[in-house]
Image (cartoon, rainbow, N blue to C red; front, top):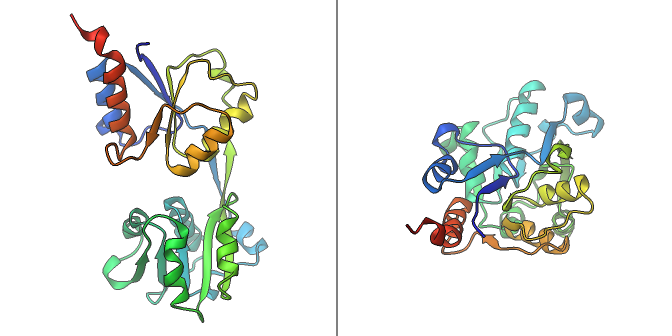
Length: 252
């Protein structure tokens, strides 16, 4: 089967410099971008209802770039000036580097994990007397609070944004050769919109272990799994897959 149409369950990023647009041009395919989820940021009053006062905390645990954005958005709206003494513990290197959007990196105490939340536990244990805040969405893996509760530390979760499922009803009769998912909520949105979704030969691409696990639990067959040592990015994996499937059609 030749690959002609791909749906990526997120909005296009990178504008005209996106490698996906170059892929469309070079491989003569169509790629649509459609956000399967919507993010609704919390307001200052929402934070007060949670009885959260940013000034009470001395360490921030960042587990996503979105949590970084919403923390600093709310800090500004609540006129809270984040002190230079604030410590940051980031789950991944990408999140830590993303902090540079808001702080002068070299003047802050930043600790970086490798991949999973458990990787940052040694840094948390290093400061047992500090007060920790965990900014997150309304969806959080249960193992995260379980791990924190076992450390016998003072910590609070602050729900700074909520994830809702987009209305995808207009896609009901549109066919794609490949559906691409980057997080579990996007797969849940697919089945929220189409409870009787039948894969029926549609190829599924997933990024990350949690997304892959969610896809399997939903009964989907996965054809493209990213990242791998060979394909660290979704773009690379899609390009290779398209070449392998469309090669015979390109032979003159």
